Length: 544
Image (cartoon, rainbow, N blue to C red; front, side, top):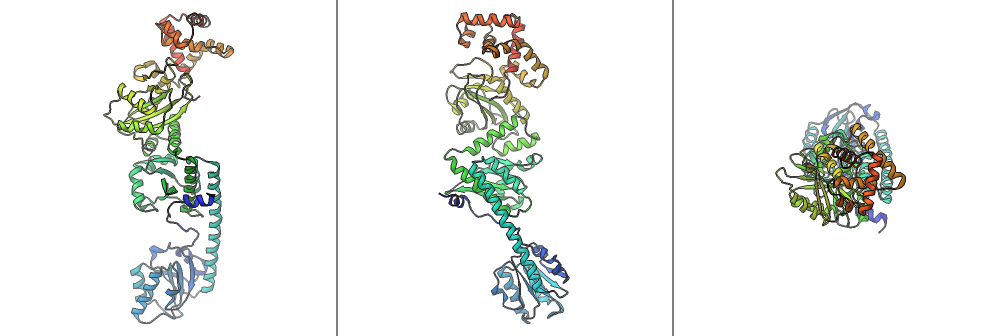
């Protein structure tokens, strides 16, 4: 299939197209050549924004049959019928054909406008304008037609530029969120990509407007769809993203300035780029997978302007925050499929968003995925429920780290960081399922809450510096051995097994550690200080 055919097929259904290149009746009345005739609007003031497709000058009573609609009719009225009923029929004919407006010049045939003309025009909302001074209709026609042609030419250039821009994005395989970003930049307005369930997949919205835009998104989006492509009460512009008979979602542009290429035309080009990209992805839906992953990563990195805006953004993406119990989680050692995790969360009445899949550093090189889980307020997330969720989401063999329960976004992000810190600790290399909860690890929670304190960082660096330097210089494993010792403080046999070292080699490593640190590893206070230092060192974000 050629790019042209694919683009035509991916274009979706027709949207209501605006025509910014056409001047309005009001604009024409303000042109110098028309203003010289002292125009007066007698009716239809509310329709002065009607676009003028062409200008036609005629005094014929049967002119309506010669028009196609959208014309601004100029007349002196010299050929109009005299009978009132015939005049009403004349006005009705102009209304039926859809003229943009009627301009009557006084003085040549009429000294004043017949009341039947004014009454009929007002009854139908027709724009009726009288000119009190004579004007050259040929000059009006020439000026307006030149304005129309110039604007249409500029619109064609703008459409070509927009088409080239989004075709280039398609050819480069740009991700959905970047296409949405470029649409918002082009339209100078917020743009949202939503799936068929009216959940936000990707969006480009000014941070200060996130709470306003995303609040109660699903209901407002459904209302806009029911009101038609131009958006009903909200003034949203909605264009489907579809190809080959399959619709994946919609693009929604919120109100913004007109664009030379037409706002609907710009949005349609974005929809084509997204549809072609979706076809290239095949059966795997990368839209929601990547967009939600980036959303969670941005939140974890603190890249949001307000808690209210970020909470609304999560809610619009399908993860409710208000009135829910939230848990940060890390599933390590297994691959996590977004579809399975979402199904597992729905099975317990919740929703989940999966964040970055890291390299599992600190977990024997196994993969690790961050998750933010939203549950009903009365849902008990017991150890058994956690294990059941992990099994359904990732299968057997997962190491599960769970942060403390949260009731708001700030607490939820702390819970997620606790889970990340937990995933960095503990024995490695075990294939049996493990569950680690922040509630059971008060020292990990302390490190998470104080992770930005420079004194804590200095403590970790000062305590472990000799071991770090030794391992870097000689490619050693002293830090790993120390972690095993601290994980099994009362059982050196288990610590040696966790280190995958023979007991003799393991004891040699312990002796070297005590020598380098000048400390006794059997001392309780020393163990606590070293454990704290090791937790600080291993509390870096996943994947780094």
